Image (tube, rainbow over all chains, first blue to last red; front, side, top):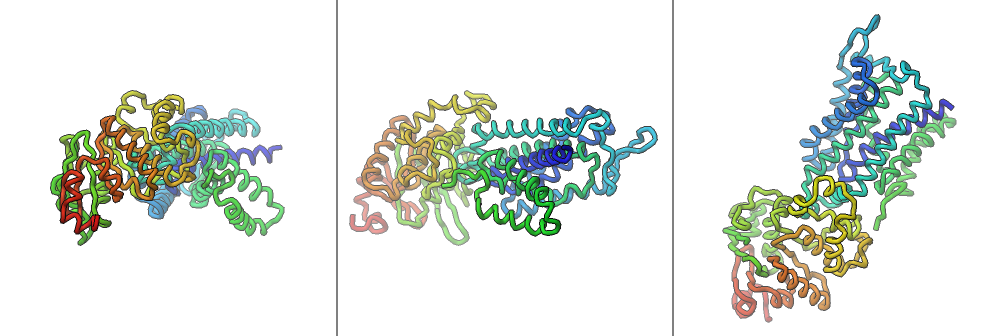
Length: 287
Length: 247
């Protein structure tokens, strides 16, 4: 059973990072920075529970705030550029954050041992769940409460005028501007919301793996983040969830019996999925 | 209401608009005509703020617009339509109008939350009126991209009106329409004037321009070559030579 709980945890956390890219993609911006906000949330929440002794929920909230604040600060300069230039700019930012954590030492003595992030060694012993005796099933449920919450909030945004404005900006910036939409404000707000969602995801990730290091937050994770909403489609938040289940549960776990052949098939199946459903699994109502 | 003083817009060596003076008074319908490439659309784009003027001045209700970005000009009360229709194709007709509700009095009347995160209930009435006006009520849930051409033109006009403008810039609203549709457009434009909206109409379709405008300015190579009532313009030898031909 623990295997399935573990898989559900992975799916939940990847759904959060996928959703963080989903909001930004609605405005037509391709961002490779989501892994960085995820990392910031992970380190912030981990340090708060381990070093400052905070309970988990406020620590996750603080991780979300850190992710959102960074995303907002990065959004202003980054969203002045578009298309490939934005990809490059956000990629550079993501790598910058990763390298920051590669060099980040902040250790505090806790009894016999020193705890906290230690550069390339990473940040070990984030054992909040173990110390409080949570079972794997409980951790899994806890993660899914946040996934559910994030999906509900984004679903509500999608149904509100804000969601329609995000999609309008994604379709035609010039027309959106001409009907009175402040492009910068809308894009930066989407980035900020995405940063908050990624920050929560990162905080949960840090606590369920108990050990994080810079290499967890590399380009691969940033690529997965935008791949989920693109493969799943931008019609609504369930597309992203469907894509995460497809990739994590089916392609990665379900095909494990194929051994080395899995990696070959992995790429081929993503290509096949995009060819069969170019608008995503739950694609929009394309004309 | 709108004053252009020595307005110029150059693209490299091309003087798309060259020293244009034009005044639009409150409540008027002013036509802007001229051959293709004479600078009509550029004029609209400069007024709407899509790109800055190279030189000259634009004043709206006495205040200079030069420093204002496009979305702020809309909030001052200037809305526009596009020559090549630019709807949000993957949004429904209803949502296209919803997105465009950015008038300053919407900001004042509704709080931040109800304006951005509120549902559709609070704005149904206003949008129903716009749909009614443009004859699109039965299509409200269609995707904008799936509308017929004439319907798309009507939706674009309605979308401009959703921001409650005082000045409306119409960039060839009759292009590609048949004469029945032009007749309907004409009565819509006159209705808008009765509601107190001032209109700058750019158009090639003389049937429409001559029928609804109070005054017409004629552009050729970015310069104004004539201005006057429709009758004066039709009689002007210079205009006949440059544009109207054998009319």
